[in-house]
Amino acid sequence: MENKLAHPKPNPQPLAPVRRWQRSQIGELWQLDASPHRWFADCQVLFPLLNMLDDCSRVFTGSKIYERETLLAYLDFLPDAFLEWGLPLEIYVDYHTLFFSNIPDALTQLGWALRFYGVSFRYAPTPRAKGKIERGHQFWQERLPAYFASEQVSEIDQANNHLLSLRQHRNEHEIHRELQMKPLQAWNLAQKEKRSALRPVPNCPWWHFVWSIRTTVKIGSDGRVPIGSQRLRVSAAPGSKVILCQHTTGHHSVLKEQPTHNAKPVILLTTLPKSILSPFEISKPKFVSF
Image (tube, rainbow, N blue to C red; front, side, top):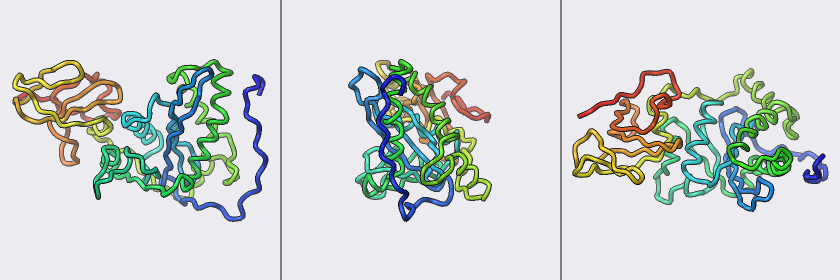
């Protein structure tokens, strides 16, 4: 407001005579959507902001800006939210090709990653059906461009550092119009009343690999696999098939087999620092040679 950048306040609206449907348990349903917008002053590019909230409490469980709405963006966004809040039962999305496959009973790679940890997609028939997250977009669109201009924020990484504290402030201090309480207050009340469907993130050695783009590749006659512009040697028989993982960090790993609950990962090659192979204090995946 001091910098003449604030949007005009909307006219006050009366509360709806009937409250919109909402889940009774936290973690029962999270609404997820992307909001392309011009977030930065003097920048015409529409960068997508991925936004996710808990349907019961209205807590924003994740808010982050990316250069593009890609599979890697969601593979980066979702596990961070799960590590912070826990695993929900369902995530409410639209029919984007990253979420929905036209092949009957088939899962997209993102849907498969969620299913690995017992989370499934629920599809909204129309944008209006996801009204809570759509209003969440309005919340950020009304505030962030002015805030970023005032604070001279013009880079995505810098903006996301601010978003962490802004999201926390919104969850902890701003009273939600429909709930008549702060979102985190509603979250804590649900926990106190044992209205929670959340599950803790398991200590899973596959975690870092499930949240990666996985493709099946064949080892060449020279015992190497193509990774980017390079061909790197792998300790496996020429002609055999292995799993190439592209991580959100920009690194790559080669696995002997696809993730499964019945075994631990066998890592044939990695360009990823060992210190961040897993976010858990568990036994490290096994490196083997043949």
